[in-house]
Length: 115
Image 1 (cartoon, helix red, strand yellow):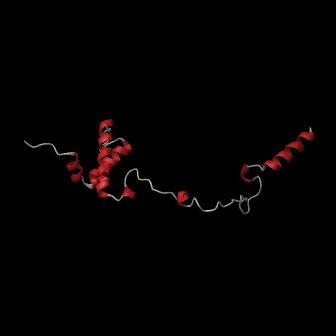
Image 2: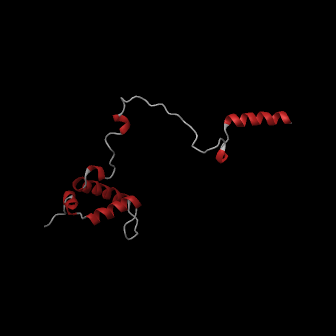
Image 3: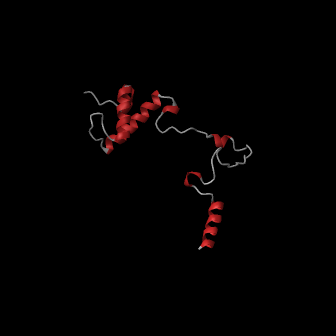
């Protein structure tokens, strides 16, 4: 009597094409032939995809990879740099339909006095 292959054996026998098809099925909810992936199939495919990636891909290429440190954490001791906001060169105040609030307030006050 032959027994069914174990999960580990199935992962070991997966090809790149099978991995790609399973990953796509998890992402889209459809098999390559267009059939819908059931919830149970999606769960099992995701487990297989992750297990295959652990054995065959570097950590930074695996599904769900997040870098361990972000630059901001590494630079915590660096002094804060002030930011100076200035209009872009050639831009005029109130350009592109955005009114300068100081000018808009003066114009509004002037118009009210005209009535």
